[in-house]
Amino acid sequence: MMWGVTLVFFSYVASLVTSNDIIMECLEFHDFPPTNSASPSFLADLKVEGVTVEQTCMLNISWAINIDASIEYLTGTRIVIEAESTYHCKYNPPLAKTNLTGSMQKWFHYLVKASYGSTNIQVANLPLPFDEHPYKLFKITVPRPEQHKVCGANVATSLGFKRLPTSPMVPVPVLVVYPAENSAFQQAVVALAEFLQWQGGCKVAVDMWQQGKIAELGPMRWLAEQAGAADRVLIVCPQVAIPSSQLRHSPPNHSFPEPSIPAAAHDLYPLILNMVASHAKSASNLAKFWVVQLGEQQDKTPSNLALELRACKTFCLMNDLNKLCRSLHTQRQDDKISDLTFRPGIAHSEKSTMKLREAVEKLGRHQPSIFRQVELLKSVVTTI
Image 1 (tube, rainbow, N blue to C red):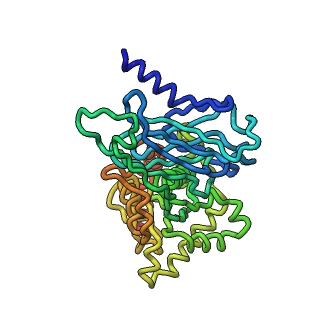
Image 2: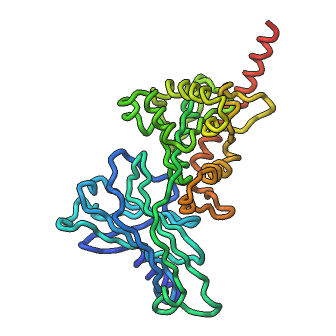
């Protein structure tokens, strides 16, 4: 009975915080975070401390929100606890509708049960911007207490909490380029870009998120600038070309919206092939360009890759997703990359890959018939 009372108390403390009549509610969130070109300013500060609640070790996650004109866009705050849970916190009433004049910052907090070991906690305001990495990162280490030992009043002292200095995550800048194929392929590209941006520790540049910038600079200049700034250029390809006619009678998938194909995609893919070809004689320059193939190979049919790409390092999703994420970081010569830690065996969770897996599987369902058509076409050409 006492345990049940304690749980109710935890739930109340963790989910409701009242300040100036502002109520904050935090719930677990398992989907990709909302994004928008109009987004609130970044967090002003982030702190994580060990506390004791009813003799249970907890982490008090505290963050400060800037009170400025951008709070009219703020819909909530996202908390990502590495290898554990993700929470979205909403404010009622919305901060833009509260009387916070005269304040520069407003602090909020959320309590979670502490897990022993080193934990990375990332927090950002929602919606997230398309082309920036808005998270603040805090690392904390919780050592395991001695057997039968109860947490004292000062958990930071009794358990020896080590509060590490806050340091921003250093995302890997990545450019994603792809051919204009069809809605199923486009959907898979969107899912990959979102995965790399929100779960893979990357700062992704992709045409669908920067259409205004492309219109301003033009496709060639935009591509040159983004390729120069990127650590890696990922050229995403289907394992076979899928004609749009193959998808006209496909049943709709309502699990997430169908993305449209930006007009710039038709220009950028030939341009990236020319760029790769211009670096073909330099192994070091060519190493910047990686190929990511979507869909499982059905048989021993030769690769459908363009000739310019056949010398590039290649990854096949979903089998190589973990390898791709690790390679993007281990290849980087930057001592700050230690800020992003892949725990052994937990490079990413099933929840975080669900959307990408679904999109790649949907694309793969159309490939067997395409392989048969390719083989038939080859036989016809051979006969002629």
